[in-house]
Image (cartoon, rainbow, N blue to C red; front, side, top):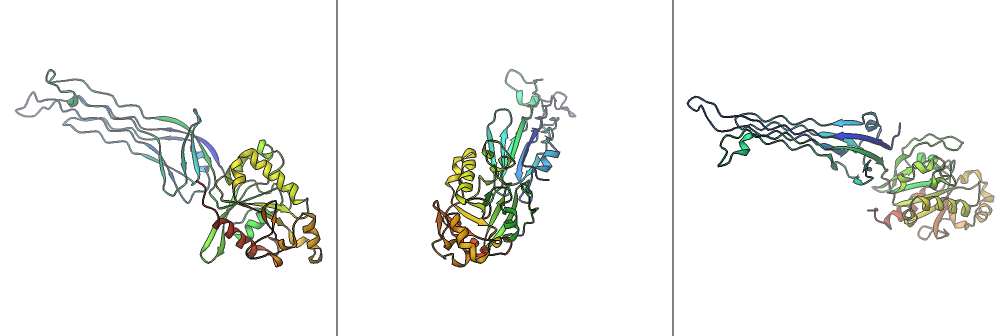
Length: 349
C-alpha cells in the first residue's frame, strides 16, 4: 500500500527532577548538599531510511513518545538521560508543522536526521544552589517538559525522469520495458493508482530513476481526477517526458493540456528540460507512419529508424520521438535522448 501523506504526534521526554540530598557519612554528620541533577529527556528524531518507499509505517504508528530523564540522586549523581526515539522515513519526506504550516525539514539524503521534538532539560539538584549565604539549600528544580508537536509528513519521490501523460497513454508499459519495475498494466484508464519508480540503464555505468504517476485529466491541477494527488512526485525530477497516445488526439492539444495542468500546480515544472514522446507506434502500419506523424505536426525524423543521433527533431521547442514500448521500437533512441537531457541539466536544489 502506497501512502505519501500522514500526520503524526511526537512527544519528547520530560527531564528528570533535581534531587535534594545531604552528605551523611561516618564522622561527617552534617555534610553539605549533594543532590544531583535530573537527566535530560529523550529527543524524537526523524531519520532517512534508503530502503523505505512509503509512509505506511508512520500512518500505522502515528504517536511517538521518547523516554523521560531519570531523577537526580544523592552523592551528586546525575540521573540517566532518556533514550532518543528514531523514526525512520523514506528519502524525499518533507516535514511540516501541522499547526503553523511551517516547513521544518526536507529529508532527501541517506541517513539525514532531523530532531523533530527536543527533550526537556533536567532539573538542578540542591547542590547547585549553594551560596555564601545559604550553605544548606533545599531548593531543587523539576525537569522541563519535552517538546510536543503535531507533524504532517509529505513524501515527494526523488527521481531523475518523470512520465507525464493522460490516462492510458502507455506510461506504465514504458516503465516496465525500460526498468525492472512491474506496475499494474491494463487497457483501461486509471490503471495506475499510485506512483511507481524504476531504474533505467543508459549505457555504460550510467543509469537514472524514472517515476510514473497516475494519468492527468483536464482540471487535475485544480483538484480534479487522480493526478492532482501525485503531482508533487514530479517536483524533484530533472527531466519530464510528455507521453501522447499516437492514435488518440493531436499531440499539440494534449501537450498544451498537460502543460496547463503542470502550470496550475507549479510554474517551476515548466522550466525543466522535457521531451515529447508519441507512444503505441506498433499500432500504426509501417507505410502509414509518416502520414500519422504529419497529423501530429511531427517530422518523419521522429521515427526511430530516422531519428538523428545528435540533433533530434522538435515540436514546440521540445525534442520529439515516436516509439512503442510494446514492440521495443525507439527505446534505444529514448535512452540516448534522456541521457542528453540529463547531461544538460543539474539536479534541482
